[in-house]
Image 1 (tube, rainbow, N blue to C red):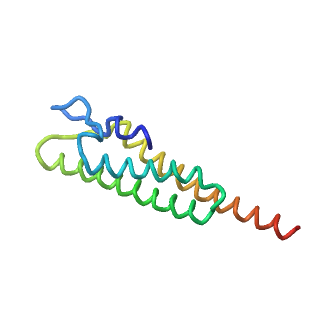
Image 2 (cartoon, rainbow, N blue to C red):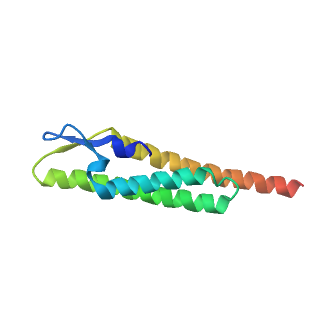
Image 3 (cartoon, rainbow, N blue to C red):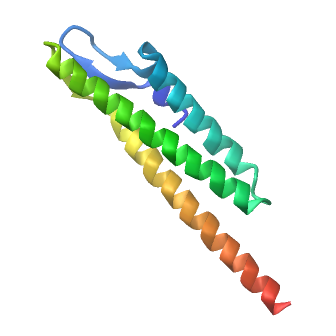
Length: 119
């Protein structure tokens, strides 16, 4: 997610590449999602806060994808066609990895609770 703002999310006939920093809302949403995921890494001792940050990261990641999809669809209706590029696939990969991280956090929390019961 950290490289998304600098990777093109679309190409068109007029522009060779369209990176996320051309559109400020997309850039802000992407950077907020990246920051939330990064902060969640260091909260490994606080599972509740970590899960909340990952959930908000997933929300911002989904909002970034929705914004990119809207921009691509709006470009198609305004007279020039826009094609999906590498950045769109990075958004999908970031969403999948964020969801996977959330599942692993829950699994680690259950594992630690089971060890506490054994003591």
